Structure formats: structure tokens, C-alpha cells
Amino acid sequence: MVTHYRAALAALAMSTTLASGAFAESHEMALSGELKIFSDMSNPAPRAVMEGMIERFGEMHPDLDIELTVIDREAYKTQIRNFLTANPPDVANWYAGNRMAPYVDAGLFEDVSDLWEGEMSESLASTKGAMTLDGKQWGVPYTYYQWGVYYRKDLYEEHGLEEPQDWETFKSNCQTLLDNDIKCFTIGTKFLWTAAGWFDYLNMRTNGYDFHMALTAGEVEWTDERVKQTFANWAELIEMGAFIDNHTAYSWQEALPFMVNGEAAAYLMGNFAVAPLREAGLTDEQIDYYQFPAINGDVELAEDAPTDTFHIPSGAENKEAARAFLKFVTSAENQTTINAGDALGQLPVNANSSVDDDKFLKEGFETLSSNSPGGVAQFFDRDAPAEMAKVAMEGFQEFMVKPDNIDRILDRLERARQRIY
Image 1: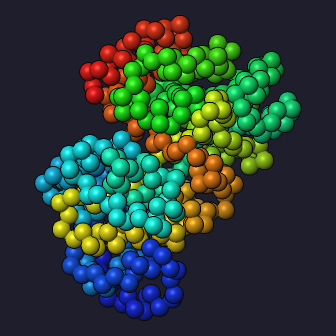
Image 2: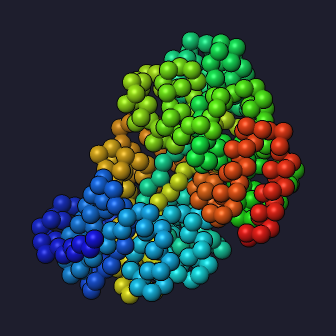
Image 3: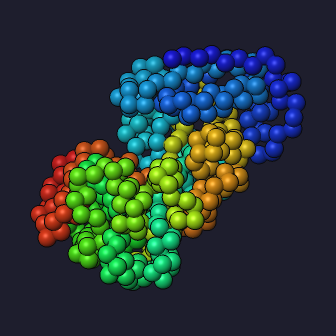
């Protein structure tokens, strides 16, 4: 689906004064020609966000003809390498971290490190690491969302529990719940990625962000003693009986009723879990959120926060306009608008943006912008290559059912690492 945007009445439309910084800078540039943008925002709400963003940018640049091509998200994943190679647009949606690495390595994404000098580097600091490969930045972020522990606040209060700040309290809380016939955590591992969330947090809390990134990049052996320590910590929870029974039979949505019904007290999940919990009848007085607690005091806290991004293909024809669009995308004003509750309903990456008046988004924004000094990971199946992610997540699921198989599982993962990377 291709849509053309041309703003002939820009002066009138933009008569109101806009803020300074990247937004104003991209407004002041005189741009012309055609700007081709490919997007995977095919669902109705994200598509409306994308179209609105392009309309506003077009109003700032009346001599620029903007062509938006929207491709179904799953089709986009299979087509991106072909169109980056054969018929590149000027701007393309994608994802941060390892998901952009194949296109960086193939020379298909433009180095945009110059955009990150100064203000952007400060306002988008939480995701700079996720946009960096070989010491250079290859795109810009426009939205992300937090992961963390969503829990039944009423159950915690009933049993005298507080949000844990450390591993020992995390486990003692769990034991108290188990003593009262309440599982500590619900989870559905039928689709393997939910178990990967647990691995991410346990590994980043045990060994730190840099180690976790090295592991997902294939630079660390899965049989390394530090990896074994992560699984040893995980085994403590499994052997306590912390997780619901038969979790391999449930999708993440099918595991929600255990928390709704009070049979389990919490869920390690992304912020997208909040809406179905509310829809199931839980109030904001009953559910709350906390950051996964520290395990190893020597490592800084890092978070999973999947980040969606824009990139300039190296074969783009209008790189000047593309760079201006990326500056516009990252402005505090734009990120406030596109992440509002009636738009994407997620978090702006720009630390100077305003956050939608939702308690979970506000808590998540504070966690990601102020309390994740270790770094921001993208989630295991984005940080690791697809083939390695599949093998590893199968291992995570097996471990949660049969923790005694750990040596066999890690040997299998290590053989896969040697073959894949």
C-alpha cells in the first residue's frame, strides 16, 4: 500500500511555534525531492501513528514529496533484505540490537553516528548501546516498552510482602506465597519466548549486560561457569516450585487467569500484559509493577526493553531528507505524541518527552530512563540470531521442566553456538 503526502499549506499548518532542538532543526532545513519510507506498521493503530507522523513532517517541508509504503509486518521480515539490496527506500522501520546486525554487516544500513553527537546522545542515552555496533550508531529509536514483574499487590499486602530489592527477599517472598498455597509466578512456555525473559533477567542480574550481550553474540561458551551460575539461580526457583504447573501447555495469554484468579501472585512480562489483566477485571489497586531485583551486587541493573527503530538504507537517494526525518522522529515533542495512550500506548525513548498518564507507563519510563545504568537489552530472540535463539529457548523450556538435564542442555547449546556463529 503506497501513499503520497505533499503539504502545500505548511506555513499555515505550522504557524504555531514549535520547540527547539531536533524538532526545530529538522523544521528549519529546506528539503525537496522525494522521500521514500517503507514501514511495517500495518496494524490500524500503529499505521495511523505512522501516517500522522509523516503528515506532520510533510507540513514542515512543503517542497518534499513523501511516499509511504506499508507492508504487512510478517511479510516485511522476509522482504527487507531484498528491498534494501535491490530497491532501497530512504527510510525503513526495523529493530535495534542484533536484529539490525545482519544489515549493518552487509553494508545495507547507513552510519548515522553524526546524528547522535550532542543532544541526541544525551536524550536517547538509554538506547544508545542498542543502536551501536562497532562503535557506530546505525539508526534511531522511536518507541520501546518495559519488562518487569507485574504482581498482585493485594496478595502481597495480605501476606505482609513488599517489593523485593534483592535476591534473598525475592526468594523469601516466594516461599511465603508457597506456604499459603499461592504460586509465585505464572508463565506459559508453549511458545518458548516467555522462558527467554526469565533467562535474560537472571543472566543480566548474575553476570551483567556486557556478558549477556557477549553471550548472545556468540562470544561466550554456553558451558562457561558464569552461565552455569545463571542456571543455578534459576534452579533455586524451579526447585522451590515457584512456577505454575504444566506451563508448557499454556500460551502467555492462557497463563494470565492464574494471576487473575489469585492462584499465582506475579508475572514476569512486558507491559503489554497490563491491558488483558485490566480487561479480566483486575483494578490498578490490585496490580502493580516492580523492577527485577538485584542478584549480584557487583553488576549494574540492566533491562529488557524491545525497541523499534528507523534506519537509512545505504542505497538511499535522498539522505539529507532521511536524516532530517530521523531527527524529527527522535524529538521529544514527536515521541510524546506517537507514544500517547491513544496512539502507540508505549514509552518514548527521549528522556525529555512526556509520558502518558498511566501508572505502569510512568513506572516503566522511570525504570528505563533513570534506573537501568547497566544497559537496555532487546530481548533474547532479538539479541541472538534466529537459529541460536530457537535452540536456546527450547533448552530454557526443557530446563524449567527438567532442571537436572542442565549439563546435557548446555552441551547442546554450545554445539549450536559453534555451528551457527
